[in-house]
Image 1 (cartoon, each protein chain N blue to C red):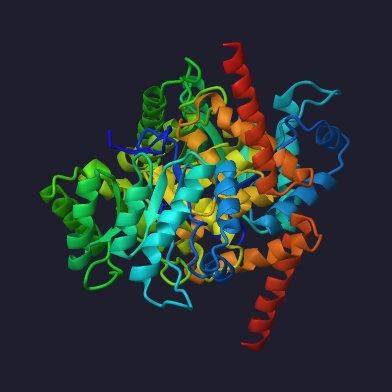
Image 2: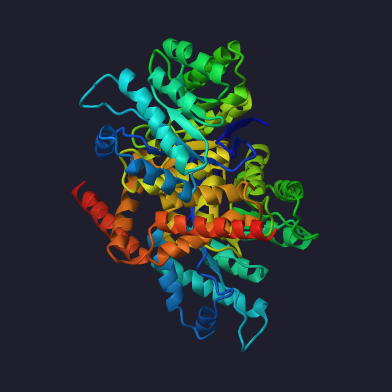
Length: 319
Length: 319
């Protein structure tokens, strides 16, 4: 079975067909977050710290780190992003012990992230574009890390799922030329908004199944894109995620500080027989009880995870 | 494509692979409802009336009617159930214009229901037990109606999904001997509680796909059984339903007066491309807004469906 192995300093996370769904926390990213961008330019990392702790408490198994901020003082990301990526990774690693996903379109920032990250991070991302393949695959090989492969190429994003499958296949083949195995490629088949394209859901479910059966690769997606522009987006996301998991999707880059989506994923894990004895579900139900009692989801999750680590510590001390 | 056609006096509902998921309202059933049982014995049908109206407002497309009450005054259901079934069907048909699902283990009640129901009701149910096959299939043939086929037989309910598949196959073959086509058999593959059997979810998803591909039949289930005995049951149900729909399940016998489950089904319909332009989703989002404003789900659904029928009436009047 396909297993993509990620590591932090001391922990291993496996993305795989026989594993619980891998939630990659998307919050540490200044894109579209003006306040965070301004903080980063000012050297203030308090939001990064909060986002790291909250996401892990809420169930993120991997944290995406993106340093793609355009400074007012220096508009050249090739100069500003690499040192900021290093700094952000150091801060996140100092707080939480989960594998990282190094997210940039700037090659220097990817390499800075690879140098700074402990363990075995996930690189995010390569596409089927020629220049990206030539820039990113050598880094993937040099650092022996897995990579997210987004199924667009020099012609853009195709609305035809067969074309997107062929782009993914090309990336897997090119990676093989570099000696990179298919189990280290995590394909993002690209999720379109169902409000704009009525077949968007079915496309993804079919594509995920093909990618798994024909290429043997794990998959990921920007899950919330499915509900773009629609009312009650959480409701769409919370049905999409279990359906994608049922079709074979093995990870998503998403906001884990959202109760409805995390509830859907925990239930889907249980229904896929990836939650032995429902232990995770029962713990999660206690978080929901605390939310009903008036806590925020992030607070309740943090309290629950502290209580759990206290119990684990206690058992170790007695053992 | 497999299409199971149900009719009320004036409306047609199709259960099918290319149709929105068919919600069969389960509420009109005195089993385990002592208050309703006592009302029925006393000739009081106010709860039946309320349940009929509420379920249809909330999105039930078909209503199950079960008259399985054991009277204190007469413990013989062969005597009491048939006239009660007739009466309940008359009352329900007087209020709402949706196809019915005639639900009984008493042959006389099934036949009374078939005589009383307008249009083309669904008969619920036959099993693989020899005496049931011999009793029910002739009724199905005589009245030319579709039937729910539950995949247990004289040996009971097997935990082995392959055995349950074979029972379903036997029922389809025996029905064929009576001249009943596979598209008039709606198989219930039997949903086990995932808290007691870790493979329960995966079993159903795989079984539904096989039943569809190998037997060409529509499927149904008692959906809430999946979460029996677990905390936060709605959360499990709300992931199970989209996953089952993604696997090919085409209907469920369930309580439609439950916001979380109905939201999951409406979202899944949209994601399966069974909600053109998201029109149903957008209407449902308005119901949820009214719920946030303080209405109950049943009240908000009723208000929305009255507003919609007013608008439809208006358009007809202008047309």
